[in-house]
Image 1 (cartoon, one colour):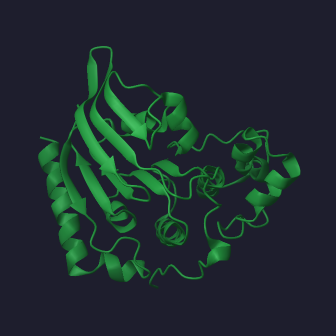
Image 2 (cartoon, rainbow, N blue to C red):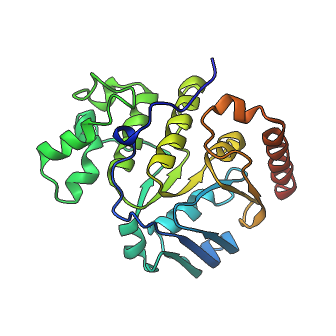
Image 3 (cartoon, rainbow, N blue to C red):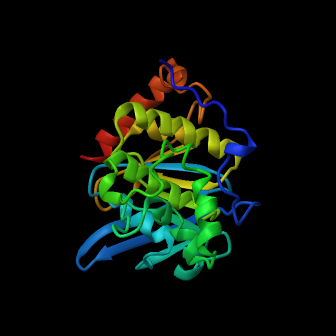
Length: 272
């Protein structure tokens, strides 16, 4: 059955963003090392407000490090990263909601309280934080599991709670590190269609790390193919049908297939 993004009107959009005008991302001459190991070298990227950029590359090439630098979790050894007019780590962190590969749910909290953590950290009281986070539970296929502990949830459901927690923060920039990696193929396609429609309804600036070239080309406006470590941009591709309403129709279109093959070719070239 084709996966379509439907039913995402205003009531189904993302939580309101703190930066409605949008915040762009600028990466200039970026370099980062861990001791003698160079992870990123002379990397440049520009992402306009409300743009959606996918990062694909070989395992261990520095994609997650780049995402952490953008999100303000690290300071670069060389060059600079800015989100809008915020260049310091603290300024980037204030503008960016980061979702790591692991869900990092707190085992002693219920699903609803884990989802509401970002709001609680902003000083929202428990009851309204729960209410705001709870409004998304049905859309995420989590209705009825609000009081379940993480150990009682499947891996895919845990990932949905973690993603919900990232969105409910309401920050203008989202840094997503393999957000759907633990989902089965059907759930993954459904969540891709949901996120695509939600971003069209309430745009955010998004940097998405994924190993799935098809996912990157479907969700993103542009895809940057990175080389093996130290990471550099091998090629940037424009997505033919970003966030199309009918996902299955989009990913089987000849233009999409050609873009996917070109990205895969660039990946092979950058891994040599």
